[in-house]
Image (cartoon, rainbow, N blue to C red; front, top):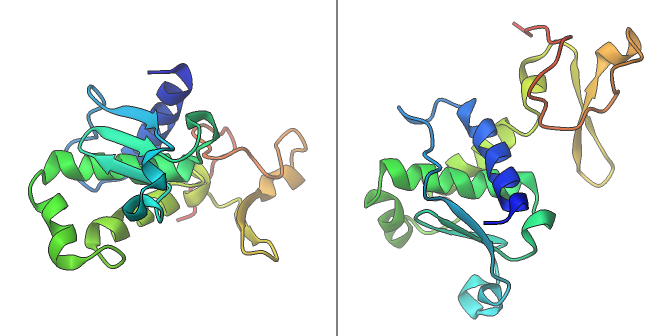
Length: 165
């Protein structure tokens, strides 16, 4: 597996480890991340950017160019398979795709961990662009200019973190 794939998977695992969806964290021992553009030319797969088959995550584009949310979403499917190896794939047969609880959970996992520590920080302010993109702004940057106004996400360590609650 390429160093880029290892780095992407490690970052996605760090994001998922912050969630409490299952009793044990996702096991990475056999997980592989592979670019397979040929697969996504097939009619059934054209609608996807990523696809998970047990411990194999296939992506449409180059691994280095894949978004962190996509890898987190697909790694969440690996986690689901590790805890529900029969029920998870069968659910797509009788529940469909878009409203499937596994899809909803994976979308939520990617969204809930997008900004890392910032999600629970008192200094966070979400900013929406005119095109619908969402960014996290650190209000602590007004107090200390050494802090980035728009930090690189997900933020895993921050000396200015202050619990929102």
